[in-house]
Image (cartoon, rainbow, N blue to C red):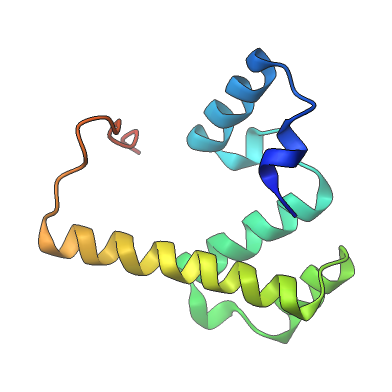
Length: 104
């Protein structure tokens, strides 16, 4: 799945709205069933990894993802978690063109 290809049908305003919604709270974004399942799983893997088990993988398979897609998603989520924790732990500053995340 290539998000760029999926967004190619969107006009600029709709793309911007989706990016904003994802950055604010992915639950409020207009996502399809596959993307919702991936976001739910990524959130669990990030915040409560011990809660990820066979049932969470079954949910991903139920929406049409095969083991290769699940593996790829796990690699991406884990890499971002690793890099963010490393950068936060070392006190790395954001690059100048990056906006700070919204406070929660």
